[in-house]
Image 1 (cartoon, rainbow, N blue to C red):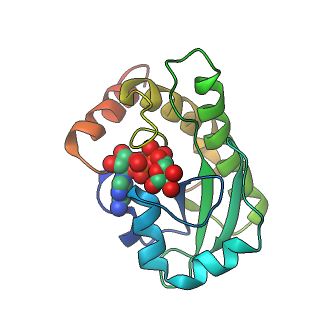
Image 2 (cartoon, rainbow, N blue to C red; image 1 turned 180 degrees about the vertical axis):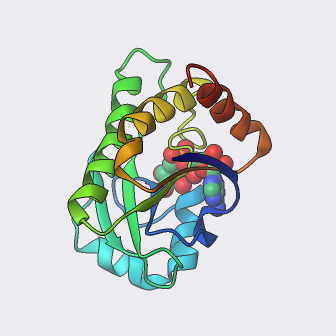
Amino acid sequence: MIEVLVCDITRLEVDAIVNAANTSLLGGGGVDGAIHRAAGPELREYNRKLGGCPVGEARISPGFRLPAKYVISTVGPVWHGGTRGESELLEKAYRSSFELALAQGDIRSIAFPAISTGAYGFPKDRAAEIAVRVMREYEDRFDRIIACCYSEADAEHYRRELGAGS
Ligand code: APR
């Protein structure tokens, strides 16, 4: 089941929330900053031992003070106009996050922010198309997949994709 919600991802009581991180995994602004603030300093300390994360890959950590059991930090691509494989890397970030959740074995509900569509500048409509396509591939392997948007406008992109070809 794929749901579109407009809310603060740090408040979701799901098994895993996905963070739109940077390659250091040590926190930043946007949703990364919100997740680190809500999880507490333990998240940064834990991630420090992971030695970073390449673009398109994902790493998992406990949720610490978050209601979510786990944080899956993934690194989306910076948008450079679409000529440097950005779409493939964004798809890889979603896929890496799902694969890591499956490998963990006890994640039945997972929430994603709109990866790369903030500071990294990825066009929201194209990002939503990629996100929904990969979510559909994994839909039967989770009880809940949530596209957690931070505005109604952002949610519209996902609702349009989910309406199409449903
Ligand atoms: N809950 C859900 N979504 C949120 C929240 C929140 N609390 N805060 C921000 N967002 C949304 C933004 O509105 C945007 O749609 O998350 C989406 C991703 O935006 P960014 O957080 O800017 O992430 P991204 O574009 O992937 O850029 C990542 O920014 O914060 C730094 O360290 C981070 O360097 C990395 C870069």
